[in-house]
Each structure stands twice: as C-alpha cells, then as structure tokens.
Length: 266
Length: 156
Image (cartoon, rainbow over all chains, first blue to last red):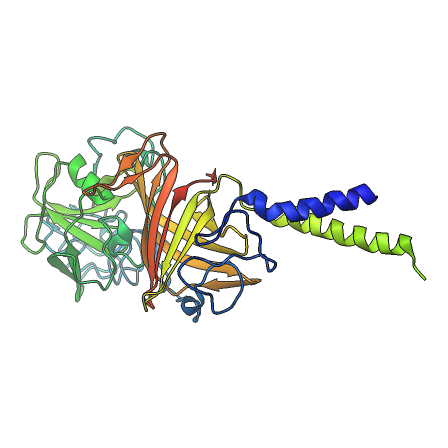
C-alpha cells in the first residue's frame, strides 16, 4: 500500500510535465500549483486556466430561422417549389401553369373555365391535352435532367471527394458559391431575378468554390441575371445564378442538385 | 493517538481519486503542437501553445495544454480545393470551468490538409502542413481567433 501511494503521488506530480503542454511565455515543465499556465501576452481576468474568451460568451446563441429543404423558396414545403406553392407541381387555378420568369418554355394550357386541373409533374412544357372541364395535364416528363458532364456517371458527392456537402447558414447559397456572408455587401452583385413579388439577388461566383466547379463542369460562364434567354440556376438556400446557354445547357430555369451537380429543368 | 491505518487509508483514497481524475481528463498528448492565438478587439493578444487538436466528425475540438478549456468549433459546407479541404466554421462553443458557453460567433474558415504533403492555399503563398489545420474565426465583438497545428486525432 505504501508503494502504491508513492506511485500515485509520482504520477500526479509527473502528469503536467509529461504533457509537455505549456503555453508560450512559460518555461518548459513548470507545473503551477493551480494547474493552469498563463498564456503569453497578458493575464487572465478570471485567474483560471483555459481560454481567455470571457468577453465573447456573453449572450445566448443566435436562433436561426428554420431552414426549408434544399432549394426551396420561402413558403414552400417541398423541394424545388417557388413561393406560394403548397404542393409540388400542382397549381390550383392553373392560370399560368409552370412557367417561371424568363422561362423560354411555353405553356399552352389556356384552361378557360376549367377547374381542378391536375398537373402530375412540376415543370415546363406542359402539354394541353384537353380543354374541357376537369382538364388533366399529363406532364411529358418535363423535368429534363442535364447530367453533369464530368461527374454524371458517378455516385453522390463524387465532385467533392465523396464528402457530403452541407450548407453553412449565414452564407449566401450556404457557401456553395463562395465565402459570401449574408449581409456583407463586398461581394459583386450579378443582377437579380424577380419572382412572385420578390427579388433574388445574384452574386459573383468565387473561384475554387463548389459553384465554380459546377460552372466549369458545364462549361458555363456566369453573366448578370436579368435578361431573357439565360440559363437560370437555382442553388442552395434561395440562391440563383445565371449563365449564357451553351451546347450542354439550353436556356431555361434549372434546379441544381448539390449531391451530383446535375441540373433539372423547372 | 495516531491511527496509522486510517491515515494510510485516507491517503490511498485521495491518491486513487486523483488517479481516476488524471486518467479521466487526460493530459494533452506529448506531441500536441497546436497553437491558438486570441486577439481581443482592444488589441490584447493571448497565445496558447501545445494545444490539442481533434477533429471528430464535423467538429474541431481544441483543448488547452492544461486541459482546462476546450473550444468546440463546428464546420459545414466543406469542399475540396484540390486536395485541400475548405470548410466554413458555423459556430464556436467554449467548454471551460464546468460551463458550456456559446461564443458570439460571426464567421470563419478552416483549411484542412489530410494529405501527407504540404498544400498551398489558393491565391496565397501560405501552405498548410501535412495532416494539419489552419482555422480562423471572428466573433461579433471583434475577437479574432486563429488556430493552427497538426491533428492529434481525426474521427470521420
């Protein structure tokens, strides 16, 4: 027992020194009775060990607004919808079904006097089959998917070394387009898209960002949003960017899938 | 009157308690090489050396050499720039003195090099050493925190 006590005392005494973990400004191996070394550069107001960050712990964490699903717009419960759409793809009244601002696709569904139009799929190119009461529009697979030319055949997150990308709140587009903090105006504004009485401002995509990878994959060049005939890409967290159409992507509105970097027409 | 057996028992109990605490908390490993720089808005600077850096899933745990304070920094939006992983720090919490205190976090960026070779930052001459991290964040009150060093542990 005596030897055990001695052993324990030695271990306790040796512990701080064995860590070799001393802050700057202190001699190596010098254990303090209180168990905490001072950082270099100043004394700590609390007198204890650890970090001197007392000034930065004075408030409760900010409660962030609840975030809808990826790519949703305000008021939407379902992925890919625009404001005011409670149900994915179905539009009661069907006054101007499926079209987005600047959308080059035509919707020929006049629907004079119709009611309860049932659109099966959300999207463009709604083909008006009947123009009678209880008109039913069967979408002709309007959601065209443009596979990523580089990672199209791969698994999810193949563009990111297999690591899942998740949006960082507080950044425009969740940080997908670069480190542009919401509210910081230093980022270059790249036009805007108006939809449903709301304006979505677009910013310049930063180099080396996932968004830049996306643009590169499709050989797209970002341009100012606003004019018609552009490729309009809705990205994470209510973000939107625009690009000139090319041989890979035709003009229109698209939803970007961040896992595979594929485009789905809207 | 002395009671040697009782005295020895107390000593043994205290020693065992100390041993259990010592093993439960655990000192920073001998190889911990991280450095944390905290610059307050008034210009005051504290530098903490030999801090322990652990990446466990989506959080970075930074523990002072004396084991008394740990910063837990969460990250998100991680993407690769070449072999260099770039993440945005989304929150920071200080676990210290028996309390868990969220910092008034503003924003931050982490550069993580999990490869065996140094990697250079884009548009910069700065290199991140192998198996190391470089992270900076600021708080709403203007405090700057810079963290650099080699990982002591990575749990994916």
